[in-house]
Length: 364
Image (cartoon, rainbow, N blue to C red; front, side, top):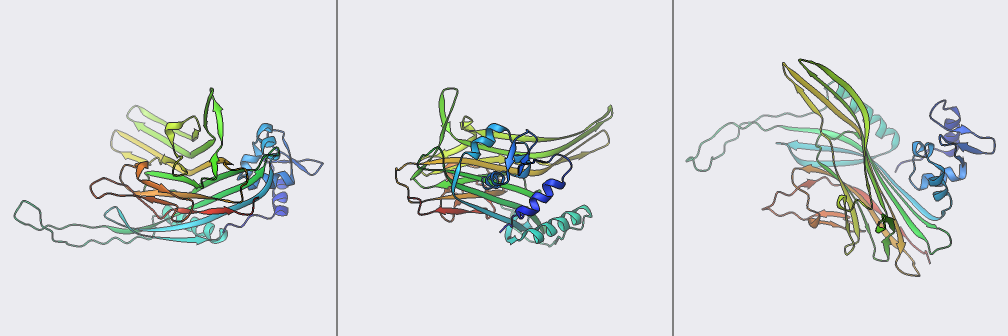
């Protein structure tokens, strides 16, 4: 589990920071970049809702007041630092091993792995062997086939924030936020999926957009990019920047909400690096710092709610194929996510996934 920095140390760090950070006020409050005064108590409350230091730093007064007014009754944070080692053969994942690491060891391994990559000394196994096979329709011949087998390791952090809170004297509402952060970009870049499963005694809150009701959902996928292109006429770039793709409730064609099976999910296609180089033209594109999140809010469907359960889950596509949400099953209890494959269809494959569930009890 991920250890949180002690609050005293956090205050020291905030005070010592000289740029893009808080100003220490005189009445035991911190003042952010938007001139919003935030008490230490409310800072801790915002953390329970999943806001990072940078997000609190740039939070406007309206958002701050919205979360400040929520009286937290119960909350839980699930956090996992995951090291995943894949064995690849003929571009197919043949095995996967996941390991949960503490913060210190996780950071150390990320730094070592990135350093080895830069030196092109990443641990790998490359084997070539002769294999005989029969070519159908030719009467049977044999040929030499080179199979490549290697391993590589990736690192990512999964965070799930869940809060049950009272708001303006109602029966209580639920807030759920999932974050996935790649600390070392994946080699296979197809589609990543975030899902939330829930019980039928709660429902997604609604919001009005242009006179219509939509589920209260917000999701983002962000990354940094570096582009440079060279032709015989000159060099263009480098272009460096940050891009964010956002999904809200009104973007109904960009998320999958299954009311009958009680789940909601989003998918994002990861951008691939480009490296083209010949005598007249070259183009290099690099994408880093992949982060995605899904935020939802729920209300009870019954007047007396004793308890409920939510699941948050993330999966990374590892094998080519077109995703059909009709073949996806999401539940609020293990296994949380599954995909129904058919041998006559070009179905995708996924890694083991990361996630878990949170159970709220004795709420009545």
